[in-house]
Length: 102
Image 1 (cartoon, rainbow, N blue to C red):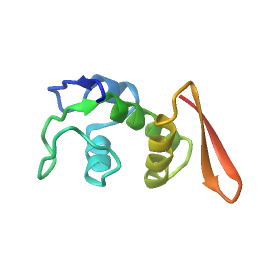
Image 2: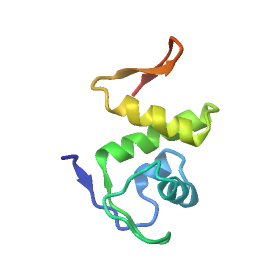
Image 3: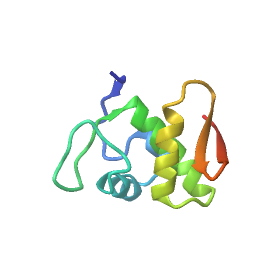
Image 4: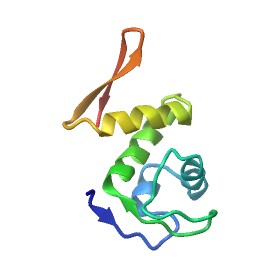
């Protein structure tokens, strides 16, 4: 099981450090790209985040800043974070791979 960070504020420090706003974090969660520990029927609730989701959100923010659309960034970030080590090679298809430094 992932380590869990209990967050009581609406925008966790780690999200703010990654350049995420409350609205972006909430939108990404409602789209299913991020998965907090508990589900709520809407926005406006503080959430608790497992460490793996924090890493995914932070990498996703970097990928979006680099020009990827959020849905693609989420898919790549989720696959990259699942690979142990400081670098991940994520296959994109048709012989293309993306090397991600975590």
